[in-house]
Length: 311
Image (cartoon, rainbow, N blue to C red; front, side, top):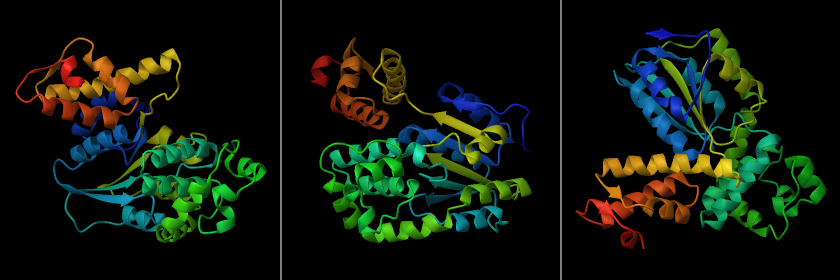
């Protein structure tokens, strides 16, 4: 097994994933893999990375970044395991890369989750946004809806949205128990980035590998720059803009996901059906996959999906 630092540290984007997977199969490994960008795409990539890392034996330890105690994770990462094979510590939704500079993106995700009737998911984003802005979600005076426009801008770095924000307080109060757990993890993770770098520089057991997943990343943070220079960063960000170039990039990602489902289910689509499907689904890879699967199942034994089937 070859493990360590390579002369050139590539950032693996979507088109380079196969090359990364081949490197892992060949035993060329990194101590840390960081997946950033669209949640579903990151989960897909992380699943495959973990599968390949443990192909010859090992265990994946899944950790929820929303309630993680980073000190505990680091202690496990630095310890020799009694278990056989590789030990992959997978931290989902890590907040190590959050800062005021990414709060606008987190806010958008919170709003989207709330309007999609997913309050618990909205709560997690709101709590993450507040922590990134230096606020405690357990203090009623810090609730987003109670912040003045001036204080909002100071804490989060972008203008306070128009309209009523009472729903933010309702969501945070409703899940207050989880919020208290989050406060503990936040306090222990204040210097987690530097502590992690120090541990990596000192060296961790050869069979231990850290796998981090993050939707929002402040690329100006020292931790990100260090991981990019010395380890593996998998960048699966999808341009969320509305310009022609952004839409083209979004369509390419969605079409690839749909084609993969059709191939797996041995189906094809009539001309124009995919375009109409994606127009209705929007730029949501997971939704595109799920709706394609439902559509393929709905046509039964038929091998070709028509416009009428879509309607």
